[in-house]
Every structure is written in structure tokens, then in C-alpha cells.
Image 1 (cartoon, rainbow, N blue to C red):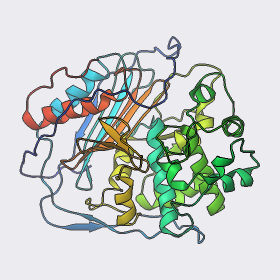
Image 2 (spheres, rainbow, N blue to C red):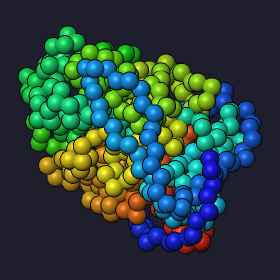
Image 3 (cartoon, helix red, strand yellow):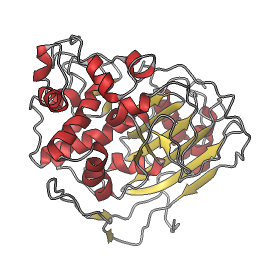
Image 4 (tube, rainbow, N blue to C red):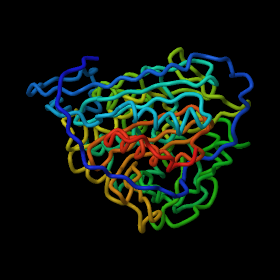
Length: 425
């Protein structure tokens, strides 16, 4: 990375406390006795100061797309910006306090501003069995839903799917599933994206003693009655996004993995994203502890089985920020629709849900993720910062606490005052 000269400007501080219970997956912590080899805890921290020397126009390399699902890519325009984190060392200290110092093994953070990665931080505690750096991939859990939603909406832009199109009946017929509730045939693409399908969450089937493969999970969950009328209420369910993954395969003729790569990841130049199994760890992956006998990653698929670096996660979210001078693969209209509440009434007093995005009342939008020994969050803030935090471990206690951790860290970096302990470790 190239560090360039710049002047410093202090952005307006947007800070708040979040105290809400999330709708993410909850699983019992795994035994960690087999993963306690001491490693170096020296952090990696890089602050990239954006250029102020004028306009620079670049283009991200893309891979040739299938002629069945073409994508139009807008070239990147990198504008001159000023340093938005004057005290990055205090940002890092706040992140470490709430994660590693509280008991987690590894953490990786990326900050994007005005289309550029401006800061990276990665560190491991003595509990880690493999030291991480800024190129380490972490499990991102339900942040995967942003990627699946973006892929679906590319297909909407291309006319291969419609938001108000009933899709579950088509998917069930295509893969040979029987729907126990006839109302499920009318569930639309938009209702799956917004978690208003009426399908229950079925957490035990995913994470406890349920099915051991995706088809078994779908057969069991779709063999039950809907909990609500489609479109009438919000109910978070991983099944919604597994079905969207099947819809992507149906209309493209590609595997879910290949469709996502051709439609989203290759055009955006994001090469760290991989779909993995529960016990699959590559040489550049954080080693999340896993309890024996589980197959939740295989069942989750499009709902939560991706790994990626923090910088690629932040850049993915930035790609749906219409005000960013980055590559956009969605129309402006669909990027806006993602950020409009799509539920009949607010989910909580603190946040609502759009199309694959959590929408906080204070102006942030993004997603969180939690599975076994995984806490993750990526948000776009009202001041223009996009922050991704990926944690290997069980702290902070609740994944939703990461929004407060991010705000503490940014506040410290802007003011030069060390963060207070507003989020319990």
C-alpha cells in the first residue's frame, strides 16, 4: 500500500449506544482445548492516507461473464479526500479492548472512505492458534446475506428475476421438494430478501441436532406450516436466503458459487471470498473453533457460509453506496431500494430491515453475523465511513455490541481521546 501526504480534517461525530437483542444465530460455544497454542500477539495496523493530488481514474480487472447473465460495470473514479481518522492508534486500541482483551482470539478490521481502504488493523491474542494479519480470511456468517442479495438484485436488473415474482414454488418444483403449506408457493423474491416470507427460523435444525445437508434441511423446514401469512410480518430465517441461492441457480443455470463470482465478486475485484464447509480451513483462514458433529456451514450456504478478508467485506458494502466513487454493479434504483424498510412495521425501535440490509435508526446500514466462535459486522456510517469488524471468538458477548464498539473506536480516532468502556466486554 502507498501512503500519501494529506491535510487533516475532522469529521462530524455520530455516536450512539445500541441495546437491542439481535435476530442472529445463537449456538453453544465450542470446546477450545485443542486450539490453545500460543502465537505472537503483535498487531498489524496500516493507515492508508488517500491522495489529495487530484483526480485519478482507475478500472478494476474483471473476469469474462457468462453470456447468459451479462453485467454492466461502471469504472472506478477515485476522488481526492482528506484523512478521516486522525488518531488511528486509538481506533485500534478501542477495537482490541472490546475483542482481544475481553477474551477473543483474533480480530481484523478495515475502514473504507470515499471508495478507498484507508485503515487496516489485525491482531491475535495468546489464545490464537494461528496469528492473523490484514490478508487473513474470517468466517463472516450472515454478512453473506448482503452478497446473496446483491447477486439476486443483479438478476433483477437483468430482467431474469422480478422482486414481486412468486419464486418458492418454482424453486421447490425445480429441486423436487414438497411444500406442506400451499401459501409458500406465493412467497416472492422480495419477501425472501426482507425476511417477510412467513418461514420460521428453525435454528435447531441448522445448529443443533437437525439435518446434516442442505436438501435435508429444506425438506424438513418446507415440510412445515408457515408461521405467518407471506408479507405480513418480519421473521428472520436463514431458510429465506438458502432459497434465494437456489433461485439464483435456477435462473442462471450456474452453481450458486459460480453465479456469485461471475455476477458480483469478479466485477468488483473481490478475490478473497470463498464458500467453505464447517471443518474447512485454508492456509490464510482464521482458525475458528468448531464443535464436533456439526454441519451448519453446509446447510447455510447462501445464508452464511462465506469467508473473506475485512477489506473485501468493507469494499463489498461500499459497492452498494451510490455516493461512493467505486465500482457499482447495481442500478441506482435498486441500491436505494435495499435501504428502504421492507417490513410492515419496524423490527425493533433501534433497527429495521430492507433488502438484505439492517437499517439502524441513527443512519447506519449494513449487516451482522454470528455463528460458532464468529462475531462480524459491517456498516456504512452517516459520516461516510464503511467499517468491517471480523472476530474469531466469543467477545463481545453479543454480536450487536459491535455497533457500539465501532462507534467507540471512530469517536476515539476523531477526537484523540481514548475510548470509554461504553460496551461491556
